[in-house]
Length: 61
Image 1 (cartoon, rainbow, N blue to C red):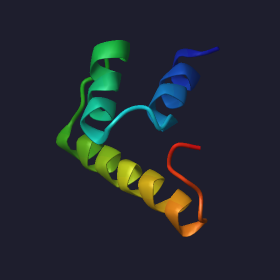
Image 2 (cartoon, one colour; image 1 turned 30 degrees about the horizontal axis):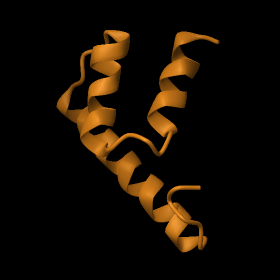
Image 3 (cartoon, rainbow, N blue to C red; image 1 turned 90 degrees about the vertical axis):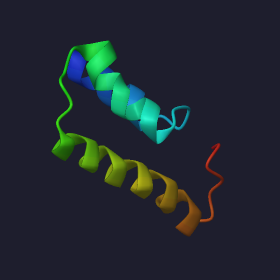
Image 4 (cartoon, helix red, strand yellow; image 1 turned 180 degrees about the vertical axis):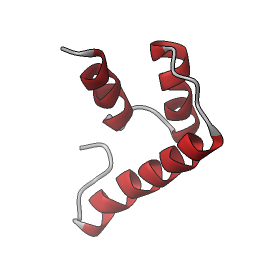
């Protein structure tokens, strides 16, 4: 699996909180997080929490 796919797999899993997800690219993949990237990560985390709720799916599924 490519590095990009590994990073996306880790970021999109429900087992990590927003702050932890913002640290993953930097700590696990040597990618420097800019303020714009942090903002996008916050948006992504908010979306990933809201989509299951609107579909009636438990966040743990």
